[in-house]
Amino acid sequence: MSKEDQTYSAEFKTKVAKAAIDQGKKNLDSLSEKYEVPVSTILTWAVRLEKHADAESAFESSEEVDTADEHISDHEDVEVEVSDKQIADSLQHGVMFDRLNIRRLMFWSVLGTVLVVLFVFALREMYQYNRLISEETALGSTEYYEVNQQKRQATETLNTFGVVDLENGIYRIPIDSAINEMAEGQQ
Image (cartoon, rainbow, N blue to C red; front, side, top):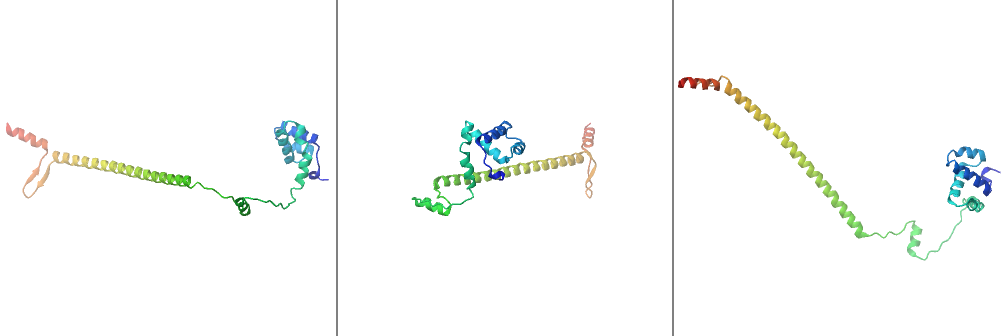
């Protein structure tokens, strides 16, 4: 007789299940070797013992369960009569008829669409605002550069000698020199 064909007494099942529970359902391999019972069977017994208040009721009808497990592989055709036509059609096709709430479905669809559109619009506006700020910053730095360059050129023009019009004999002198000459000429 193989291990799978053995039937165990309720006392034996209780003893093994209590040992498994005491170990916290850990290291069941040693219990399996000790009692020569598969680990899955020990786990099943431990769960059954935990579900029942007393040990006697946990395994008193276990022989019936064990014999029922043997007949699981046997398939029997069962005829069921259903008076409701919708349920009969559902069983025949393997699906149930859904009663959709169209108003609720439309509400959430429209709300979702509006939220997505608002989100995209907000992203677009944020992009345009940031682009505008970036352009203003770039433009401001460019204007600052141009103003500084013009100041440098004006300072250089005011503080150096140079030719304005060579044919007419017009020359440029530094402003400090021009002021000094004017002051000496008035004295």
